[in-house]
Length: 339
Image 1 (cartoon, rainbow, N blue to C red):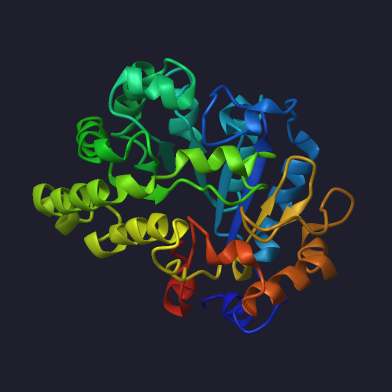
Image 2 (tube, rainbow, N blue to C red; image 1 turned 90 degrees about the vertical axis):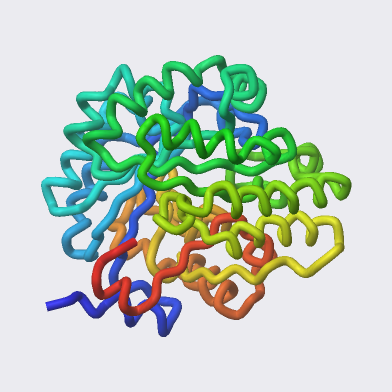
């Protein structure tokens, strides 16, 4: 019988079940990305005891998917043990990764991961090194090709001023190395919390300029024409119309349009657990409550978290209006368990 509790989540600010659990295993990272400052902070790993306790609670909370994030999750010394603790309880494991350790840890990833989401922001080693701060693209693509026959891989490209002209080339590289899905999102230039304690003024330099906008519109037209088969097959996750929301987002940043209203119910079906146990309703909202010294089942409905969900539902959180990575699942998807 389907678990109906996720449907009840959609009607209130209280979580009765948790279809998706996002776990920051570490805030250490072996990249030096322009669009993220988390690597500048001292490295911390989630205690193994806390991670295993989260896995123990998964069944009662109806957790169907866990996503390991960070930082670079594969740098946690016990990530595979933690993954197996979740899988042993019937939870599907996803890994959000920069891919630098894919080749080195290929056998562990193959044994313990159900889905890979790989950040891929460039099509050439030179461009990759400029954007990500490390010369790693060849080894990433080698690991990707090695794992692609065994683990479904989605590439995710952060569209920014330095790479928006290269989207077609990025699609070709992803296809050539076995990606099953190719996805795009706009660089976040407004949120000071989501990717380390960032200087938002500096982050604005990563967004497209007003002069870039007509060029980007032409790039999107070319993508729709030249990759029609990839859109039709679903290889490119977003439709042409949805990709044009990226243009609208950057235009809105220059006051030329309204920000596209994101369709999102992430705070009602998921929670993010940081390395120290603090909880966020999603990547982009502040923390409220902690699982460090109480069960997750209780911490989920901490008054601060419920207040954040209530504010999100009421349209009172400015972060939501400019969100670059909304997550929405309707009732049918929740009943099917697809996330």
